[in-house]
Image 1 (cartoon, helix red, strand yellow):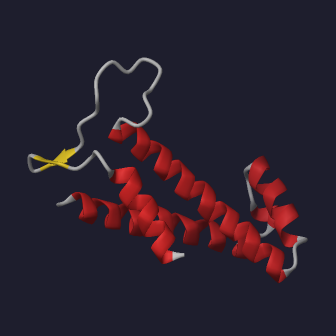
Image 2 (image 1 turned 180 degrees about the vertical axis):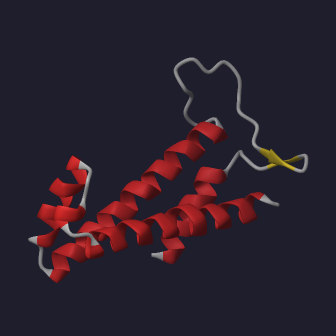
Image 3 (image 1 turned 90 degrees about the vertical axis):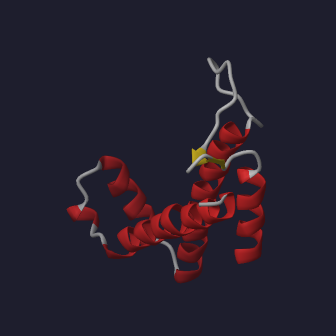
Length: 114
């Protein structure tokens, strides 16, 4: 697996799938069926939105997921360090180093796909 393959898989499996999961939950969960108090509150707000506002809300969720992935890649790439981190991370697959520019490649892909 190359770093580009890794990015492609993260894009599909984490960004796209989680965006779809949250969108489906928002569209198909009845407030009374939600067991989590936070979900109930979000569903109450979401259900009051018109279709255009709902689309913007779902876009915001996608942006949050994108930013989270980007921040994790920044740590793996050595752009951002964790509080107790003393050495660089090395992410590898079959002895091939994957990290170093994951954040840049991921963000470039998100710009192309938008």
